[in-house]
Length: 383
Image (cartoon, rainbow, N blue to C red):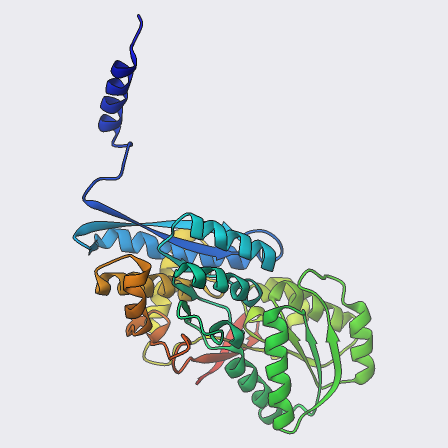
């Protein structure tokens, strides 16, 4: 039987109506939240941790049945992989802009966050990084850039003072992975330890893809430091520590938040030891507010059968902060909710979130950790 064009359109319309698949419901507002992290390469475990935090937030928001602009809001996550590569980060940022996302949570790394922030700023799309700590990110004058963790000036400063005043280190080797994050936190640590009276006896560089550190560690061994500081991620910090022990380097290892993960336990293996590694996480919950974080970790474990690695709670809060700004502005349009986001006052699982004039979190907390008996042990939460 021949079916003319009008009949085909009529039949397709009937099928679409029956399946509810042709177009969004007129009373529904679809809100697209972009999320970017390395989902491939050596930092993929961090990327998955971040994405899981975002998905959990999206699920909770949709369960609430929020009404924004007179319509029921349905949140969707538009996830992209930047491979921790600045060029790839810029490319996926433009992809999200072209997809007309309502906001972006990410990127994970400072090296990808900073170039991407220019693209989001030009498009007027709000961006909240849950983990990028390089100060430059929020010092570019972009009104669209925010972060929910402390920056490297705070992180490196705290670690440098702790290394000299509490660990009684006198001589230091400083190694970084030459990324915006690793170099940034290493530089701030360097400034702080010098101000506290410490001495740098070796400065070395590697990359965020390296696995063999024998050459630089041979130089470090010759300098005989009390403490080795590594600016970079756990994927390199773990093998670095193993190779330190193989070469007989007895110095303690210190690192920033990228190396301050539960993943270090497996990555470092027997080299981890007890009280041999000290690090700080750009975030932390003080006594009296830990129940919310503990509850989140339990929910995360139940949902994914995985432990939180590091930043999933901050990603969760970043999504919730963005959604709260939309609700308070009664609009998901970036230009309308952006001014509300800048003045947000939100109590999250990671603590109280208020942004300063740069978009940095006010009074950002830091948590100092060590490792004992194959587990991460909290020493103190400081601000």
